[in-house]
Structure formats: structure tokens, C-alpha cells
Image (tube, rainbow, N blue to C red; front, side):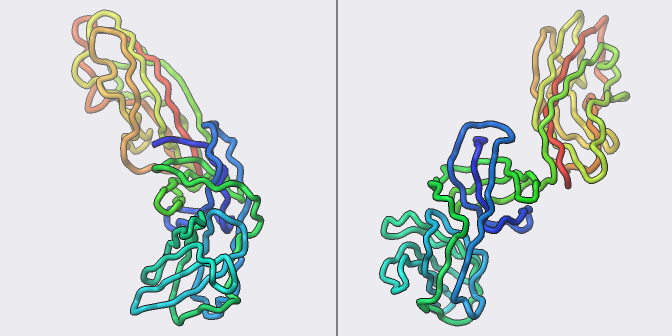
Length: 306
């Protein structure tokens, strides 16, 4: 999965969450850089829908006024999008049951439209129009594959979205009032390592009520000294109070040579107002005869409102 910087424009300027994904217009891929994403609110103006059958419009590829029609055969609804009021210049078409209908480009128009339909009667009036407002003439660009990016909402929240190429939809995976990426470092002595299961070492303080920490990555560097530690050599990152494992570095302090092991985030709940500690998995390591060594660690994490 590639992380990219995007300029994204919401069709309605509403903050998203995972339960109610909306459609975004996406344009201009750029260089990977933090905190440089920009946004401008977008809305869709619709006319002619006297029966309120059409909602949650999203338009890709144009800011011009478009004309739409809705017809039905059995339970298959068909939405056609035209460039003219006489319905001679078809630019997109889609069919399906009630719900979200994706109208794909035809006649090399490069225009696609998504709309939610609740059918009650055919409607093909010339007065049926739909148009993006605040269109800024950016060149829309279809994304290849699936990518994730952070997006600053109009209310100041920063959300992480997944862009799906199939329908160019963006679903929120994190909706946050604040979101920062932080890197912290620390050390573990031989005494810390030999008691790290019984006595975890605190690394990140609790973020406060209404906030949670998500581990993004990091690494632990083991500096071998004399004899090797054996058994229970995997170092976990855990929630300080609950002990929930959120990342681990497998066999991080095993062996008779210096090495660096990555912290790999693991699946699980993100718990509000929980700090992070380093803890040896399962039990304390067996020190062996004169076993000694030290570690330095780096943890990369984000804090966001939940």
C-alpha cells in the first residue's frame, strides 16, 4: 500500500466516519509529505427531483452542469447523465437496484457520477440537473490500486482515508479532532531486560480522556555484551493498564550479536487514554551464565481523538 499526498475535495464538506462513508473527488497526486494536505469544500446542487428519489451525489471529471434521467425496468433502476438538456449527449450511465448506483463514463467523456437512488417513479424531465459548486478546474486523476492518506476536514479534524480505485470512493478509517505523528526513544539496561515481563518499562504516557494512541512502527536495537539471553526474548509494546499487546519485536534480545528488530503493529483494539509500556512476552528471559546486553528503542505513534 503506497502512502501519497493528495488534494481532496469533499462533495459536501461533512466530516466522515467509518459508519457513514461518503464520496470524495480526488485530484493531483503529489510527493509524500506530512501535514501538507489541503482541502476546499465541495457541494452538489441538484434540481428537478420533485419526488426526492436521488441523494448523495458525487461527480468526477467535470464542473459543468449535467442533466440526469431515472427509469426503471422491474427492479433495475437506470440513471443516465447527459451533457445537454435534450438528452442527446450521453456522458455516463449506471444501473442497479435501489441504493448506490455508479454511472461510468461513456462516449469518452471522462465523467463519472455516483448517486443513491430510492425509486418511486420514472423521471426524465429536462429540468433535472446536477452540478458541483465551487469547482476549481483541477484535473481529476483516477487512482491505481488502493492508497491511504491523511485528510484535513473543514472542521479541522484530520482523518485517514482509504481510496478504492473501483468507484473512487474514500472511506474513513480514523476520524480525529487532532492527529500527530510522534517519535520517541529510550534505553533498556540489562536489569530492565531480565525483569521486563514482571516489571514493564513505561514508554509513552497516557494521552488523556477522549484520546488514543496507535502504534505505527519503530525498532529496537540490541547491543550484545557477554552471554546470550534465552527463552522469552520477544519484546512487546502493550497498553500500560490493560496489558493489551499493540506491537511486538520478535526475538529482539536473542542471539550473540548486535541486531535491530522492527516493532510490528498487531491487530486489536485501540483503547482510549492508555499509555504504552515495553514488556517481555510470556515471561522474563533466562539470563544464563553472565548474560548481559542493552537495548535502545524508537517508537513511532499517532495520537488521535476517538
